[in-house]
Image 1 (cartoon, rainbow, N blue to C red):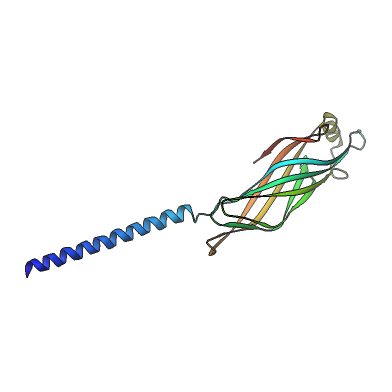
Image 2 (tube, rainbow, N blue to C red; image 1 turned 135 degrees about the horizontal axis):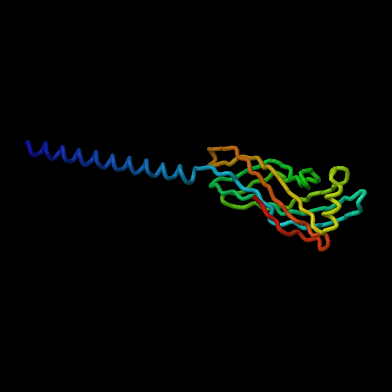
Length: 190
């Protein structure tokens, strides 16, 4: 009788050890899953390329100005395991800290771990906006015009159709437009 009680106790101890090992394993799996897959990262927004569609410049010293239409390919990279649905946003173009143009980023959805690419038309004009005419005249005569493009894209990342987290992706890109060749050089995004 004594031996059968010892046998039952050892069987119970083994059962408890298996249950404890299973619980520890499940906690480890859940912890790893929550730290990698369920972690929501901020998507990134970048200019991939910019083309000058039309260009009109006047480099005289009394009233220098430029008018151009830029077609920019914007890439919204979603690094999450869930989709990123974003609202309409404005992409602004500045020259010397003054906003000289804008374009609309239309609302869309970037799939999980994918990059959403779209074209945005930016209408840019310095007429009546830029007050530093001497600097503008010098830049236009040099043949290179440095512009900055900024945008803020707001949306929600949805993981497993349950968890939703608001995220805002910011873009800040500088570019140099060669006025003679109508080419964009030194496109750099932060």
